Every structure is written in structure tokens, then in C-alpha cells.
Length: 188
Image (cartoon, rainbow, N blue to C red; front, side, top):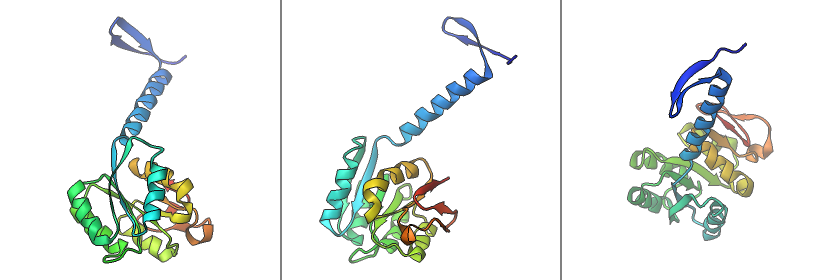
């Protein structure tokens, strides 16, 4: 027989089993995790307007995520980030004026609380390792963005890392950074 704990509620004392208590706690944790992904301000950084439009289209399915602004090069990304203080930055690597890897290093100083997701066409595993090793939370290939951008953002907002399944030709290996991130999956 399961032991029970007694709790005082609005209508008197009630008995609750550990299993019921675990269910309630799990539900409350789920609510807390959902709150983490609400009201997120996002900065889009890509030099190609069509890609920014594509990202806007994908993000439109999540109205609780707000696009705070856009930038077309690395230097503009720094200015916009300092001005807008986004929670999340979607950042390309091949940017004019200041490449995405260098911009990410500077962004960490300007907006230390912002999370960075690289969304790029560069699939070289060494670049992926550098990006994640330098502090980015996720790496999504543009070719996979339609199906992987939203899961990547959700994972990052829950404190996890994400690497696109198309990195290194979809190899089922792992990208090494501060922690290993399975391709197309999240890592704690």
C-alpha cells in the first residue's frame, strides 16, 4: 500500500499519494517550461533578404515569439542587439563587414543574456564545432530550417543545445563542443 501525505487545502485536510504528488509536480514543471518559451524577442541577422523573410514566415507560426528587429551584416547586428536587447539571435556565419563567428563573440559581451542560434549554409563540421564551442546554443543549416528551426529554438529556450541533422551530410555522429550534441537532436 502506498503511503500518503496530508495537506491542508482550501476546504480542509486532504490525503495525497506520492504518485499523485509526482503528477502534480510534473504538470507544474511543464507549465514552467512553457513559460520559458513565451514572449521571446528575436533578432534576425542574415545578409540575404529572402532568408530573413523565410525565417519570419517560420516564426509566424509562434505568435508568442516576437521579431524585435533585423540586421543585414555583422556590424548592424551589434548595433541592433545593443539597442533592442533581444532574448535570442538567429545569426548567419557568412555576413559582410563582420562574419557571424566574430559577431557572436562580440554579441556575448553586448547582450550576455541573449542566446545565439547559427542559421547558415555552412555545414563544415569544424565550423560547427567552433560555433558551438565558442558559446552558440544551436546550429541549424538553412536547408533544414523549415523543419528544424522551431525545434532548435524550443530546445535552446529550455537550456539545451541543438545541431542540425544535415551537418556533415546527415552523419549520425556527434559534434563535439563543450558537450556533445547529436545531429538533429537536442542535448541537455
